[in-house]
Length: 603
Image 1 (cartoon, helix red, strand yellow):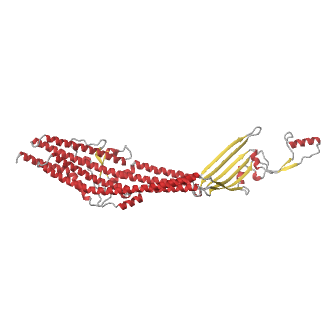
Image 2: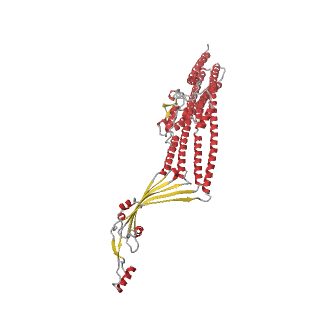
Image 3: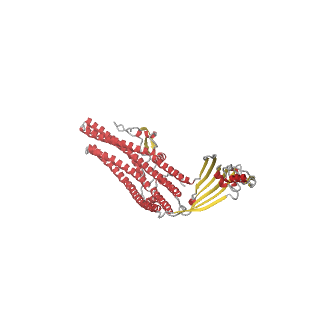
């Protein structure tokens, strides 16, 4: 055997060893995936590792694949279920919509506050004086309790008023033949209630009940928006997770391809030293190696991009320590063997899509507006009733009878006294002025506030009134226009509902088709990868026997790398299509065993 033959045999043996070492990891993973492909599975697996931590992977020579700001020494294993849990706890978009629900709950509570009773107290002190008269002092304290009543739309006001006045006019209001006026304070107390009840307009439905009912329905809408955001976020997490799986697998495949090129370079350098190859062949291999290294650098960048996208979804803020850690997905893509039922997916979507439920609530709100504006077209007829108890008293009043002359007073100021004076001057014995008896103030009217309060409950104290307020605008164009506008809005929302139903139909049909296409792509990609391995093995034998060229060998190696990437891309696309189908059919919570609680209790 010649020296050239011995060297060629060594080169062939080295090539076989290098090829076996370069493909061993990828083939092991593919065998694990192929063993599971016959299982009818649509749920995500959480048991099998798919990515080798970066610390255990062989690094391509002459390349620094360390990602900026990421410590790869202690990678963080992450399952899909764990990623979803992190997102549910920390995702900011979910937190914002959760806050929307809590805020709308405060709006509902604020509208309920319209029916809270309101207590009002008004104490007042006043001093009144006119030219030439002594100032009087008055004190009043009025209090009332007011409340709207939800059933029927009426309102009541209970009042309790008390006053003390020294005004002669006020005293005259309660003066009679048996009560003198002047010189004492008058006390007054009143206790009663008024009630107003709409009988026609606002009886069945008024503005307050409209606002409260709509606020409750808006709360239900914001809760549906919250659930929609949670569904969309879970879908985004699933897509980001599988994109990271693909990016890491692509990085591994590109690294294996670089290692093959490095081995080819070592072999060609050995041939050149042995005189079995021209030095020019080294440039061809070095060029291919540089191209593959460039692809590996790009693949590493894509890993960072996809990992950051996932971290943005599952981390609360930019100061989290996990930003400096590398994620290692532990779930492998599992492909179901059976097609998805279009009819079942469509039924799930029509029954569960939150967008459709939201539009149904919007139509209910339209009905509320129509009911209210139809009520406003009616005439206003309100029943008004009042019942009160009044009590009076006078402080310092004389309760005994008083004997006084019939005519008294200053003749300069009193006409009767002046006439009497003149008559007595002309005939001192002609007229005798008789005395009259003035009864004292009754005992039940003598006293202060205590007496006026007790007088409230005398049999002669009750007062009541009953009446009606009748009002109606001619033509009533405002209410009629509002009613017509509410009906038009409902027609628009019915059209929006039909439009959204068509959107849902399209999304479900496209999602089912995407799942089926990805499922079939997995089988074809696996076949392409298996044939690419066979082609590379054959091409390497031809190259080692001198019947092929370096260019063709590199082409076969690149084709195998692309086939492997196409296979893992098809597998991850299948999982992403499953996630999109779960979102489109609104089965995300059910398929991922998630129970979402409303941020507030809706009642």
